[in-house]
Length: 125
Image (cartoon, rainbow, N blue to C red; front, side, top):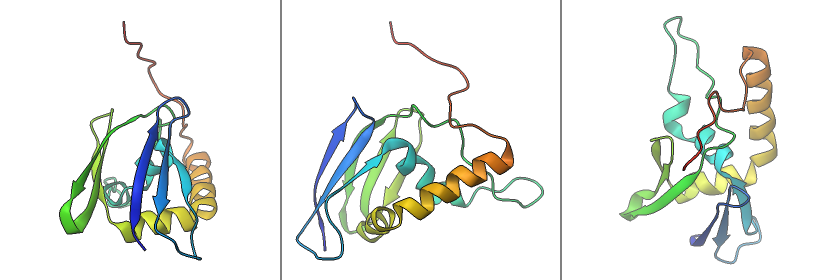
């Protein structure tokens, strides 16, 4: 299975991912926030006590570009300066496990006392 097309929709802050024909997964729409908090780079961050840090305050993050990275996958570049490479297999996993991963994230946020909301609201003039 391969990704055949990405459609960035800034009005609803989501990325539509179209896959080649496969009975296991349909075309899917994932929020920018979900993609941003799901990057492998986030899962490796630990604080001084050795606990994994929860990525928070990303509700309004935007996906500004997607670059092909040859056989490695796709680099997703976000407006908060973060970028990460997502393999096609990882993108498929994110699509298939969306409900579980999203609920786990919301639970981690609640348990840590953090929020999805941006800390400071920036407006472009």
